[in-house]
Image (cartoon, rainbow, N blue to C red; front, side, top):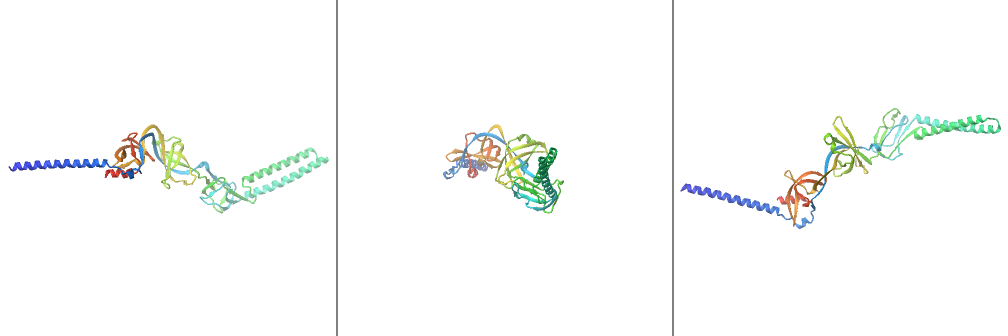
Length: 367
């Protein structure tokens, strides 16, 4: 009788456990069904952006690192044309100068020599002119021959040529007759190098430049491309450039030149990107991140990047079914470029997805 009671108790226990399990499963199923049937309130629904899934050309992207540099086509090194001593430096590093603006003044014995040559040439011309006039008068009086007149004319023409040469030399060197060589800006731009101070002795055989002026309205960016990525870079590829200084600003440009040689030290190929810089935001030697995009001859499903939710090591979107009902749907991502994400699977063309406040609704559905 005792054994029968024990068997009955055991059977009753298993029955109770089974009932509880079934009840728990039903409750979990009910909760899951209730969570999937969450209805988005009309007040929130009116503010949401709902996109229709479509296909677009697949774009491959590659992120490179690089640095901002001067546009060397709009950069001028200023060298001294005469020797002497610097008396007055009028600009400092970083100053913006206009074309023709005085940068410095050099006291030069060479300039004094050019001034002396000018005086001599003007005097010789005046003497040659008087001699020519005198020979012509004598010729008219029969006291001089035609040969004498021709010789005087030749001497006069030589004096004219000598004066013109002296004037050209003086003009090349600043046209100053006070013994000073005035250094002027050949272009408008910024002083990006300055290698001279007051009382510096200048020699024409010195290979160092005095100033470097660069027009920073255009800048170059040199990006590093590793061997494995060279085949992905082409001339004309559009690029998006970002910097540490302006993390939320994107500078648009294109690949302008490929160097086609590898650096022997770090085994990278340089590519040049030309960017407009009208507000001078980009400074030489800034670190830059360059996103190079290349359109492929393929089509892929694409959605707004704002529609993606990343959770538990997976990507999800909220597929909208109408009447305020949305379903969490896992997707496989190919890549993300800016505000556009390319999808391999999980959704189809024509599906409608929530493209704003996706994380808020996702959390609500999960809770």
